[in-house]
Image (tube, rainbow, N blue to C red; front, side, top):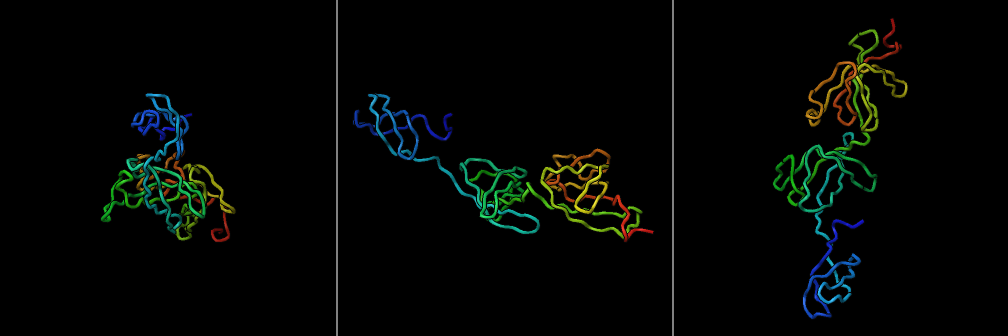
Amino acid sequence: MSDPDVPSQVPAECPGCAEETPHEVLKPGGHATVQCTECGHTHKVEVPGPETVDVDVIVSQDGESYAASLSGDPERRVETGEEFIVETDEAIQQVRVTSIELSGDRRVEESDLAHAATVWTRVVDNVAVGLTVHPKDGRRDETRSLKVYVPGDYEFVVGETASFGDDEVEIEGVQVRDAAVDDYRHEKFDHDGDLVYAKDVKRVYARDTKTTAWSAW
C-alpha cells in the first residue's frame, strides 16, 4: 500500500540528462531511489519529508494536568470535542479536546495546527465519575458522595443497578458535561433507559439498593 504522504514524482537533477526533470519515486525514504521520466536513468536523491508542526497539549485527568504534544500537517484542523491519542512517559491515553488556544491567549473552538498555540484536553479512556448517592430509605440528610473510576465507554443507564466495589446503587439521573450536551440534546437524563457514556458525565445521581448501618431504622 502506498504512503499518501510520499510523492509519486519529484523534480531532480538527472545525471543522464544533465538537467532537472520529473522523476518517478521507486523506493521512498530520506535518500530515495528515483527514475528519470525523460531518459530512464535510475539514481538516488534526497527527498525531504512532509512538513509537520508540533503543538503543545495540556492533558487533564482527575484534577491534575501534564504536558504532551500533537504533531501533524500544519493545515490539519483540530476542534473541540475531537478525540485523539497522546503518548507521554507515563502512558498512552485517549483525550478529548476541550479548548484551543491561539497566540495572545485567545480561545477558539477550531483551528489548524499552524495557528494553534496550545490544545487543552482531558483524558476520556479512563475517567473519574462523581456520584451523589441517596440512602435507600430516602433520608436526604444522609446523602453521600462517591467517586468511581471506570472506562470512558462505561454506560450509565437510568433505572439500572450498578456495582462499584462494595457499593450497589440504582441510577436515577445523569447530568451531562456542557461540552457534550450537543451530542445528547439534553443536559440531564432521568427516564428509565436513558444512557450516557462515562466520558460525557458531569454527575450521576443514584440510590443505594442496600440498607446500610447508617440508614437502618
